[in-house]
Image (tube, rainbow, N blue to C red):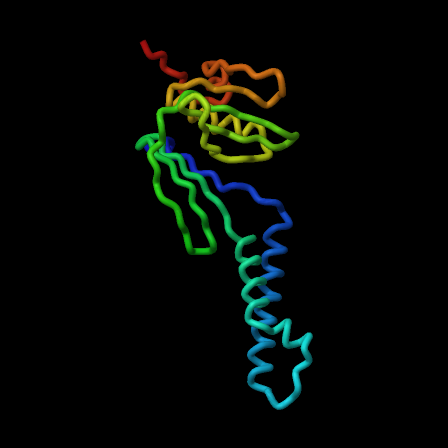
Length: 185
């Protein structure tokens, strides 16, 4: 039951990004091997073009760009302990810290463009935390409904411009099979 109060979402990335990142890291490794080979075989004259491509700065720049494209972002929301964490992952290296979740006013599912849905946690009237972005509207509402029910807050459907409205949580929880929201007196 406690695991149901922890929501972890891996932020999506374009399908081309991992392929481009791995290609760039591969090029950086090739340039590094070329630089080592050229340093060992210093008997030949090195052309200025070849010297440029095997320079340390270019290898470092290409490596940094490739590694930056490999970084994945995970957002974890621990509703049981009222905290959240934005974590950045690069392979087995993970960075992120738990922050206290402020008193939430409402949760909103927002859409700026087709097939792009943000789940935002709103607090202090006009401040928000973007929980995650996804392409699946039903998944966005699924997670937003869980948060709204657990925190006993409203859920705003802002997926259609100029037609924002609060969702009836009782109907939505019935649709997704959650426990009905409890009314606070």
